[in-house]
Structure formats: C-alpha cells, structure tokens
Length: 120
Image 1 (tube, helix red, strand yellow):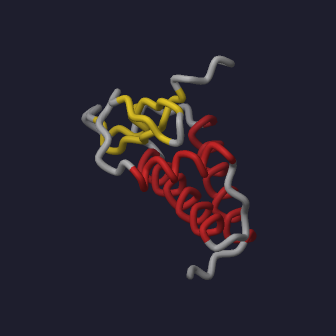
Image 2 (cartoon, rainbow, N blue to C red):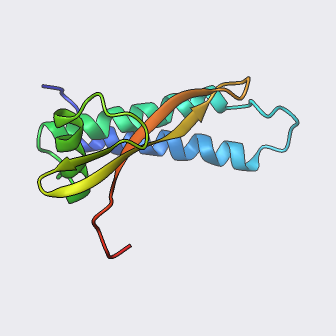
C-alpha cells in the first residue's frame, strides 16, 4: 500500500500546472526548456493517481475497469490485434505519449477500442 493522499495528488498537479505555465510564458529559443521537469511532473501525477485508485481513495471509471480487465486477461495483445472479451470484440491500440530530445518515442500508452460499440 502506498501512503499517498489526495493532497499529494493536488500538490503534484499544482507542480505540473506551474511548470506548464512557465513553459507557456517562456519566450526564449530553447525548445527543451522545462521539458524534463514537465515529463517528470506528469509521471508523478500519473503514479500518485494510480496509487490512490488502487488503494480505493479514488474511484476507477468504467472504461478504466474494462481496460484493466482486458490488460490482465490479454497482457501480450499486439497493436491492432482484435480480441473477444466478455462477448464483445476489442482492438488493442497504442499511441505515443512522450518523445525524447531526438524526437523518438520514449513512452507509449495502450488503450482498447470497443469494435461492437455502435454509439461511436
């Protein structure tokens, strides 16, 4: 169990907002200014939020519960692979969420698309 609290999440989010504000108001010519600090702050927000959800302090959304179930049932699913889970078909997709200084992707985020959902 982690010892994170809602205040820890608020503090992490405030730090991320502060850094994003600094970047927005930065008028210099260094495109990497604040980049590593912003990425670290964003990862910290994600880490704290996930820990709070895992210990029950924050509620999981319906989509998060579904995706966690799919991830546990099918941990080796590849990009664009179609699977059947609880009577529905889902497709695994990945998107880049962070790039390094060279422009190469340094972190990917996976998500699931419900192929049987007629609402979209």
